[in-house]
Length: 322
Length: 253
Image 1 (cartoon, chains in turn green, orange):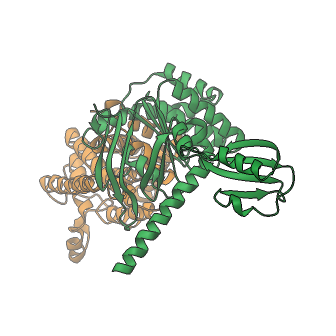
Image 2: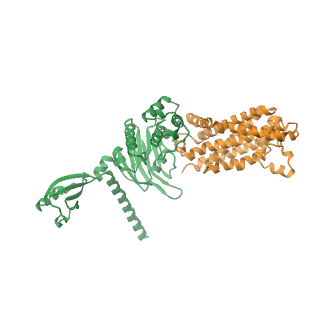
Image 3: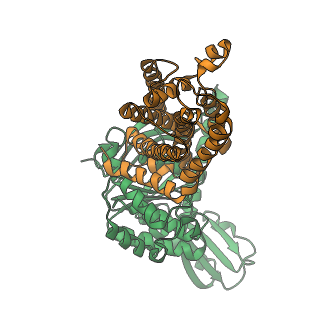
């Protein structure tokens, strides 16, 4: 039984030679919320554009609900709603008509009741007959979500739903996405805001330079990749890290009053016990102790940097050999 | 077949015409009336009958054709260009709708609109001059084929155009001159021999001639040749449309 959305070895080379996607494999299960996390130009939009039918893949295949997205496009596209990154709208149409139009376009017979409910869920009821150009930016984005949901899709793609959006609106959008997810819709969102992925996603796929670097459940990713830091508030400031402690990854903060120890939770031994033992044998006392988990942001930067290092290494090797 | 999809595009396009009723209906009617006043009354009173038809009546089919062709091109080109301009094509391209269905929606709406305008102008003409239609069936066939061909042509322009200037340039610089020089306001036999020969290279001549024949049974070329010409032009437009969707030209990366 293939996954609800199954992406296999998907590549896209644009006509200008730009490699947007490079052999992407990804399986998405029904009902989950997956975040495609990556910097600008990583290939996130290209990936979802291919699944939605806006961009032709150069090679590889995608199936949705067991159907090929190109051969059985009628079946797959009916299941999908897309909220694009920009706000493309027909300025002179009314809110109700444009949502109704989207529903028809996706092959559904009119259902004004459903659309009324949708507009009400998205707080657009009092704008039902307004021209779109009269809406605020936040309303336009909600309208695009309404259009994407107009044909009752089971999958929703949100391309950078909170790019260039103020804090209040971002919070609002997050609430909305949470509600959608609770209704059982499978959601794929792209973002370059780590906190967005951290806030909402079940799983995170980190994508950079057209390749997926890692796909993990968010919690596991944070656990696995997570570094922890232990902060020790010293009784006496430390001007220099003693040589005896050279084996530990240590540094000082705030004029030597705080000693920071970096350790990885993935190791069997974190080294905390021995460090504390060593400190006490050296008669270094401390008043307080706390630990901190690194955020998805730190993990992300690590992953992307690592990748860049590997590439650089490969490049230099290639250059020297040939 | 995605019938609700075709309906959605069709209604959407008709709604736009309704919103811009002045531009889409009133303005062609006004400009046609102006042609009647200038060509029909002021100049026409000094021109004798052409093949037994008064000049005012003679130009009616040409005027309808002029409007039909320019409006078909304008409606259809704008219909597909505007979503490209606003970026809303993403929705059409991601919908479970085939290329054929998209064309049926857009071109169907453009044909309907230009047919309505054509018939309104026919009725308006009746207020100014006597009109006699010998072959109603043929007349409607020519109207329909011309509206369809030029709407398809307009659709192609709408896909090809990168900006509003390009969108206007073909109707202004090609369609309008061809119609004016295609015997809309005169019989080709009134021209010097050299220009008669040149005129036979103008495809519009065959459409206007066939259409006028359905009214007054007078024509510059045989009706079958007219029909053949419009059929050829239609086939060319259909082939290019098919090619565009096959290759995704200007629509998909």
